[in-house]
Image (tube, rainbow, N blue to C red):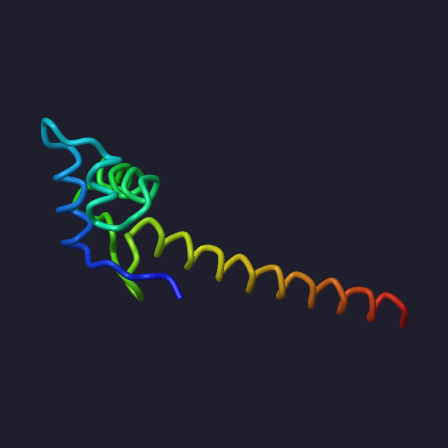
Length: 93
């Protein structure tokens, strides 16, 4: 099972790695995490700022909208398929 880190831990780890005199490798080793994980967290903070690391069950607004659109698309495709089958059925009669 993967370890879970708090939003605060991730922010502090990135802040430590960005301080003068520190490297991502050093900080990662000291904290017992993989260097690539620390770089990933850093990139998430750069891209999403305050919305980075939303946590389990929470989504960034754009992720939530995307999920809703995918759900709606699935529903519309199902409706389309039902209508296609109905047209074929009535065309046979």
